Length: 156
Image (cartoon, rainbow, N blue to C red; front, side, top):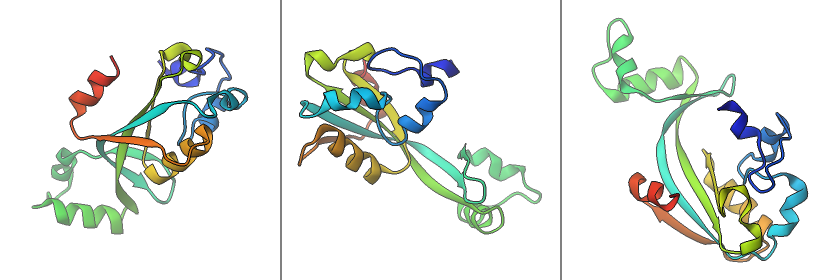
């Protein structure tokens, strides 16, 4: 499944590892196709996905799981102590990860994903700014979805 993250969702082309740089806080499309999205009618759906640890020293992310709190000797008694320990000693930061989906209504922009461009981010303001710039619009239609199941049904 690692190859699926390297395929352009609009054209189906395979730019290999370069796609990771192209899709950073944006859609998974190649730069040469971005001009076609100017003025498109689209809505951005955002849903909170999960908490993740960001390692400030090395830049990698890992899942937040409270079961790891019991792995220490002696185990932590509450969540607050564990988070303080991870942030001060292990130089980690607890951040939110969001799933987002840009649903494009224009017929010629449906691409390989039927107009539902899905991605995730830990920095929402950058996503909003880049998608406004991509669509060349002053106001981006944004819908916040609170329930993950409702968000998943949008993608069907």
